[in-house]
Image (cartoon, rainbow, N blue to C red; front, side, top):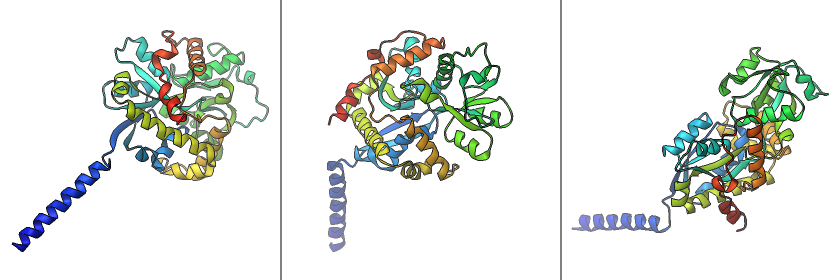
Length: 331
């Protein structure tokens, strides 16, 4: 009888603990993020994960890397992901194809282009007209890096189609290795690859496309309109966590940030991560709040139009929800 009594007490104790856990909201909301690539350019996202900002909001975030903006869109539209981190141009492409459930931009992470112009030889007195007649290894046609690259060239009176040999048929993942093996005289690269090339003596950063092009919604968190309507509180909590991370990045040094995010870049030396973060911080690439404003949206469309890649002039209010971000930063 005594054993039965003890067993009953044990069961009651377990049930009480379980009930308390549920009452305290210990069951987090699961959110699946699809990032378009693993990049130090997305440092605030990794800060939000490592510093527990998502957990503070009761979110259990699963991060997956899906290479290619089109593949991120497919993942969102097929409900394999809840939120995508990718360039805003992808939401325009989806809308222009007649999607009944459009992709809505709700929190901006980066606000400039993240690529740098790398030359084989150092050049302290670089001028863009020196690119004329050269072989330029660019990014994938139709993607934001290539569109911004062409935009900057045109701003500097260079016709990408006639003034140089522009290579666009190499996959994103193979661009760096193609340059290091001898293809091209100039290449457009993200960090930390640009810094790694400098360290290895393969190339030298001579210009920043981010500084040249101005502010654009380069990388933005987005989701299906239906998901946002059904999970508005989750989206708000997510945006709040990102805003905390953005403030953290603004208030801490490149060295501190690099050390925190290093687990996401195990094959990259800490000093390269630090120099990469410093470059992005110095040119204000990391947005200091999640609001995507209309001026940035229009700049994006101008760049797309100039590259012949704007399928339709879609208004800001059709694909951008800034209200949630505005509510978060006003709290």
